[in-house]
Length: 377
Ligand SMILES: Cc1cc2nc3c(=O)[nH]c(=O)nc-3n(C[C@H](O)[C@H](O)[C@H](O)COP(=O)(O)OP(=O)(O)OC[C@H]3O[C@@H](n4cnc5c(N)ncnc54)[C@H](O)[C@@H]3O)c2cc1C
Image 1 (cartoon, rainbow, N blue to C red):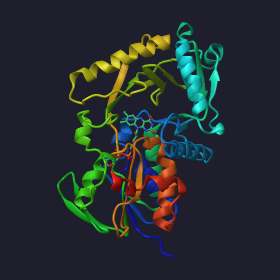
Image 2: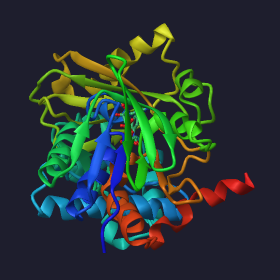
Image 3: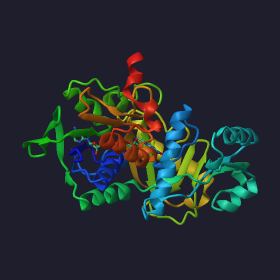
Image 4: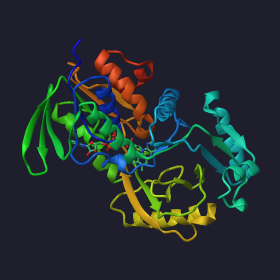
């Protein structure tokens, strides 16, 4: 049977993963982005790969399936997943007790989470200041992703399999099976396909509004001012210059999380909240300095290194905070994917969404993440 032709809108981590999978499965696919690949939220993410402490359980499972999809990809030679394991540090007896409860709460035995003694933490992560550690826990299947390498590699893979990439073309209108793009020089172009898959991050709502669809994503403008619902925050991701920090794992402690960075430095962010800031608040620029001090307290080798880059990212947040992957119109010509934790979820969403679009098979793990759930809200 002839495969449908597909346009993927958005070349972030979700769109690039989808495009590579569509192309691998023999579909004719074009990828359109208003800018370059990996320039949206996927450029300002912490990229922690995990199914840790997420609720409800079906969302946690979806994330764990994402972790497993990265493991399979790494076995096939993907170079972007750094499965360092995550060490959560306890800095008081009370924190150590909370950690024990958290480890016991992880529903899957094969997630491998286990409590560590203080000595075990320091053996695994000798870069940490021993005077700051009471105990800890390890989550060995977690890690981080070099998102830029991932997106560009997947895009390249898609192109090698016959896909077309159209950067710097903004989608201005969508009708059934057609869309109109405007290039940066103002020229417009009409594109057609059997199926349009919108994976445009915070641009998804506006694109679907053009097709007359009210898509339940928090307004990015609201989001950017930090005025949305809890969690609809701007997150601040900072990276130091190159440094011999000795950090081997993804490490979290109260108030700070850090991991190795693609430039040989350390990437760090606030933890557990990730912060709740307005992009326009001048105070935002004091945050990297405050967090670097916290990172130095935990890891003294960061003493002399400075912050090299700071990214302010606006989370892609469906109204209930959970993933949306579903047909957006009755005729099944427009499919939409929008989610937070999109880096963790991308490889699993790619295979399951492509199964649904090409073969009409909806994977069990996607069942709770359709649009029908918003009808009752
Ligand atoms: C601070 C922060 C920390 C995070 N930490 C983590 C984490 O640790 N782990 C994790 O798994 N996830 C994390 N996330 C979430 C994750 O980064 C996002 O879910 C993911 O990057 C979303 O990818 P996307 O492809 O859907 O969107 P994007 O990366 O935003 O890509 C969408 C693309 O669509 C394009 N586009 C938009 N509008 C149009 C238009 N009209 N026409 C054409 N193109 C258009 C944009 O240019 C963009 O390239 C974090 C997010 C933030 C902000």
